[in-house]
View 1 (tube, rainbow over the protein chains, first blue to last red):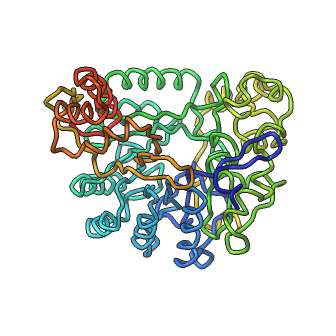
View 2 (spheres, chains in turn purple, green):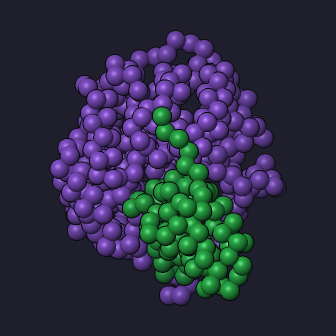
Length: 376
Length: 95
């Protein structure tokens, strides 16, 4: 067993245990954001893992080396056993992050979560303009509810991350997002440029900003980093259609991170099911540790052996790991290709033309995310 | 308007409840667990953070560490000031 304790060799790659796990507790959500990171085929409540199974997953994760769990969805607060999950994670020494839209919580519930050991919530803001926030999330009065949730979180002493999913319809609000984050007393903001797979890929023409908008937004971020030093932590995911090199997706496939879906499917990345050649294991059938170390989906793009040119001989191959496998598949049809976000990819020019073309046209109508639109 | 906190020898640093010191038994190391982040701690960082409980000034904290490590207090104080300022800027220590 000792080889599974502190990492082991997999061909030329040294495999380490995972430190982070995304637990997608449910696909149910009161919002219908058109860039949702869930798959197109969404599951109903009846398909979800029960409390006992999640506890077992958390126990196995702790033993495997997971230090942080991101409780997400859908909207994780729609699970009425969320407090028990937080308490269980806390007991196992795992740090729980609650990823929520903040429209379904009341103060008592938040206090119970805090008592169970929750210390941090990540609150998503579709916009800091009330009317626009409702249009993007296809919701009513969402912004006011989020602000109320933020105020309760502050009173209870919870740390707040403001999550700002950025696209062409709110990109000019970035400055206002920083002001809002400071105003609600957030410790941290994630400027999360939308990544284009799943729902966001369907809605790309409604969402993708132009190169000029993106550059302008980056200036605002750079300025805020200086201005808000010691006041607000700023994390920014660069929109990679306009980047020179791809993002180090997941810090390497099967390297630090795993995700578990509402039905128990274990993924190297939350979007991995968009790659049809991969086969995934379920926690109901196989121990989590075995899935991490031996599961075929985790082995598929682990290390650097799977790489083709130009990645294979690239000096950056262990810096960005060839970028995002899901994006490579979505745009080239080959999940082992260099991510076309990289200027060294032969597909980069076509990707850039797509982005320039779509962002110059009028935005299309949103296809709102909802269960049943695409069958599971 | 919120302002950046500046650490002085009279500051009394505290670890906020959203930052937890944790022994990672799988990797045999100490870490600080914070919102969506794991910070690996060396012996020195751990020693400082353990004393950040709001009851000691940085001066007092440096004095304790100087005794424990048999090192000049002035040098330790300078190191601790820089360390606490960095952690305060990352919102991981309160002043």
